[in-house]
Image 1 (cartoon, rainbow, N blue to C red):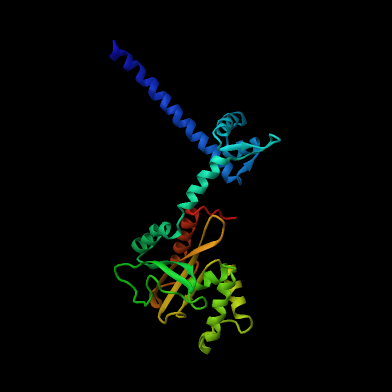
Image 2 (cartoon, one colour):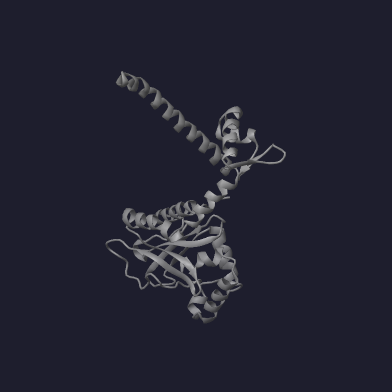
Length: 272
């Protein structure tokens, strides 16, 4: 008799589990939809955004409010992310390390495209390589983990120079320019060389060099942004000039930019 009851109850339990899973999926869709709308929206707008009926979305919002994941404003017309959602976001941000998150992108560039690549962060002496990957047939270059790249003459440095508005960065660039040989200075604009270079990088959103920092070596770099929209790292690919196309919109430049976007997204960056 017990076995017959268990057999009869099994489909019911299975159906209940499916309903609970579906409810969780819908609840998460409501929460993520609210986040994607900037963390604040009306019931009508949120329902339209996730393509569900307002009545259904309202039922889930009530539960989310009870759990502290969503809050309703004093006027009752808008819903916003609650304190518990904030705590979840803060916990995720504490784990957001651009160096760790970039590892998978560097490995993909190395294995799928046989590209020598690295990620750099801004140190007190300049852009510093913190992770370096090279394929089975590496490019002979004298840069490794810990190497500091110039701001004016490397693709990596130019991205930092163009996209970081920091006094220390500009001071380092001015010191480089003052110490540069005439042939290097000639590569920059005669009038306002640093300012013009920054404007060019901002317009392109990336940087590429050919035989500038290292003779016979070309490179292309793309920015990695954190959740605040601040540049936090630069992803770079390099190769021997004869067989390496550093064009920003070329095949290599495209995959480097795509991987930089992947890392930025994992850090919580939302493109404007």
